[in-house]
Length: 436
Ligand SMILES: Nc1nc2c(ncn2[C@@H]2O[C@H](COP(=O)(O)OP(=O)(O)OP(=O)(O)O)[C@@H](O)[C@H]2O)c(=O)[nH]1
Ligand SMILES: [Mg+2]
Image (cartoon, rainbow, N blue to C red):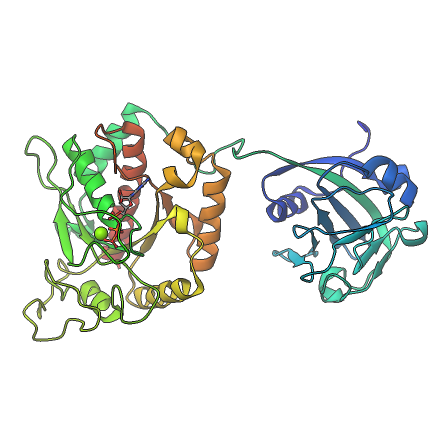
C-alpha cells in the first residue's frame, strides 16, 4: 500500500476528522489503483473494524459513509446506530452529517460493493453510485452529491480510535513555578483601563452545584496560601447559596486587596420561578443589588426595597460575567440551554463580556483526575468544551476549564495555574468593558 496515497486535501481531511472524532485514518483501498469492483473492495476492506468510505465526484463533492461494523461478503443486514452518511461539498464550510433512520439497519453485506440503501457504491462494478434517499438514510440529493452520480475515485479508510488522549494539547499552557508567579503578579497588579474603577467585578452565574462558590474559595485560597472556605459550598437539590455576595480577596501577609471582586449568586434552575431570577440578575448587572441581598425567586428585588441601591455607579456594576458549568453536567437540558440563551441575549444587550468556567474537569475525566496538566490533552474535555461552545453560541476561546480547590488540604501549583489563567481572562474582558 505504500505507493497508494490519499486524494483528500488537508482541508477535506480536517473536516472528515471533525465528523469522526478522535481517530487516525488508514487508507485500505483506492478504486483507481485496486479496481472499481465489489471483489476488490472486499479483498482490502473486509473485517477491518470501523471504516469510512470516501467517494469523489466530478462536481468536487467528497461524500460517503461511516460504519463502526465490519464489511464482509456474508449476505446479511447490519445494524449500527453509529453509522452515518456525510458530505463535504465544494465551497462550503460545514459538512453534512446524516444519521440513519431510527430502527432501520445501516447497510447490507454481500459480495457486491457497500450498500447503505440510500447510497450504493460500486453498483454493477462501475465507478458510480446509486442514490435512493429515504432508504435507511434521508437527505437532499443536491446537498449530498449535487446529483453527480459518476465517481472519479473511491477510497476506504480504517478509522483507528486514538484513545482518550490527544497527541497535541488544544491550548498551550506552561506548568512552571515561574508561570504561576507571573500570573499571580499580573492579577495582583492589574489596573482597570483608565482607572475608572479600582476593582473589576465579575459575576458568577450557573446551575445549582456548578462550583460558583467553590471558585471564589479557590481563588481566595490560592492567594492566601492555605485552604479557605468563606463562601459556603456543598451539594443539595436547591442552591446552597441563597444570598448575593460580593467577595474581595486580600492576599497572604496583609498585602493589598486584589483588584477583583467575585460576586456569587444563587444557582440557576430549569423551571421559571425557581433559582436565580432574570429581573434580579439584571439589577445585579446594573449595580442595584447590595451585598447580602437574600434571593427570593418568587419575589425579586424591587425599587425601594432596603437592599436596592438606587444610585448605582460604574463601580457597583458588573464588568464581566462568568457562566459556571459543571463539566460532568455539560450536556444541558433544552430548558437550561433556553435559559442560558435568554440570559446571554440580555447580557449581550448590556454589552457585558462573558466567559464560561468549565468546572470539575477532574471529576469529568479520569485522565485529568490523574494529573491536572492533562486537561488540554483530554479528548473528553475538548469535546465537552466544543459542544458547549456550539450550544451556548460562545466562542471556544471563551471556555476555560478549571478545577476548584475543593477537597484538598494542600494547594497545588498546577491547579492554581488554571484558576489564575481564568482570572486573567476575566480581567482582560472586564478591561474591554471599561474601554467601551
Ligand atoms: N471534583 C470537583 N468538585 C467540585 C469542584 N468545584 C466544586 N466542587 C464540588 O461541587 C459541589 C458544589 O459546589 P458549590 O461551589 O457549592 O457550587 P455552587 O455553584 O456554588 O452551588 P449553589 O450555590 O448550590 O448554586 C461541592 O460539593 C464542591 O466541593 C471541582 O472543580 N471538582
Ligand atoms: Mg454557591
